[in-house]
Image 1 (cartoon, rainbow, N blue to C red):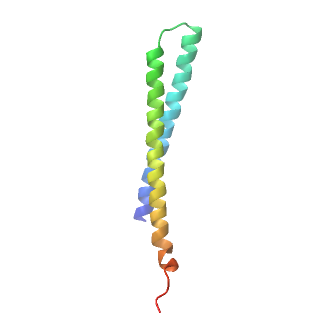
Image 2 (image 1 turned 180 degrees about the vertical axis):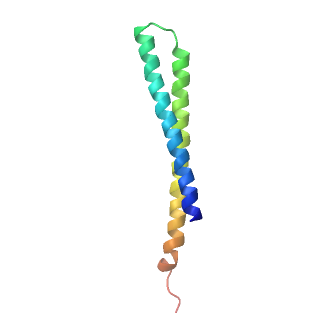
Image 3 (image 1 turned 90 degrees about the vertical axis):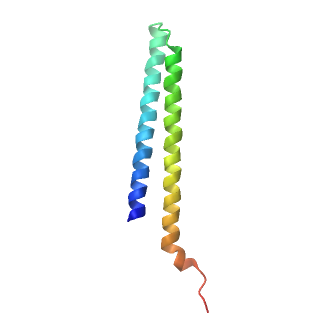
Amino acid sequence: IRIMLKRCELLRWSIMFVSGSIFFAAMMVLLMFCMAFLNWQIQLVAVGVFFCSIICLVIAVGFFIADITKTLHALRLEVGPHLLPKQP
């Protein structure tokens, strides 16, 4: 149960950071339209938003990899005794 709770926390963080990445990507598209159609000079803001989007995505992947590691650990705990060779 403890491992499942930790996995849920890791997945929650991963989903939150992926959502942040999607939000920043949408903001970047909006900024690009403003630069193209309204002739705003906000290139540095767009680059900053893109950077935030990528950082959120990298952090989300890190949490996802941590979840996979926890899952494999739980699997080894569960099936490990069944896979070990039997002692004579």
